[in-house]
Length: 192
Image (tube, rainbow, N blue to C red; front, top):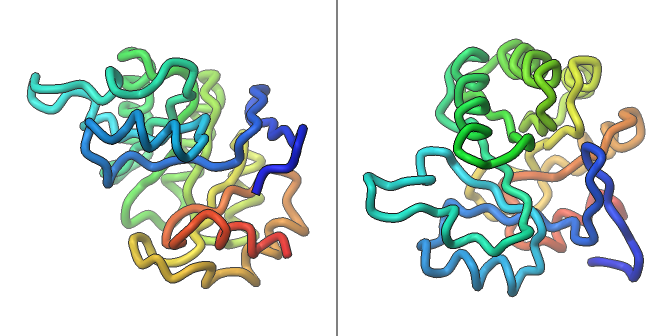
């Protein structure tokens, strides 16, 4: 998947791996091994997992130098997403944030993206692959757009290939295929 000297620039930060690892399905004991074996330089985390009732802190299991990408999953409004993003920065997660607003008509995602971009966050909004929404997110200050490849958790591969190709052709932002794919190679199908 990676080519020699193939760098990826996102929000002014350079990465040599394009693979972003989700942490939702791993036990805390497996996080470090999963990051190292996958070669991931970015890992998503849910703020609610940062400290599970005083028992353990996921941040203690992530290797040093890995960029944290907290997500706002569970947020129902832009205000909730902004609050979660601000809290994640306070607990040491940095400026990257993946915006997810459940049951959203896109308005709340766009509104949260605009507010957080103004506050200096590197905003990576999760979205359905829709060209008009992607344009609105770009204009709101998104660092990239993250269209779903297939329904979340289905491992069906790239079901939205034609829609993602439209985004690749029309949007001047990095396009990061997110959700529903079974393996990283399936995300690359959009580029073929």
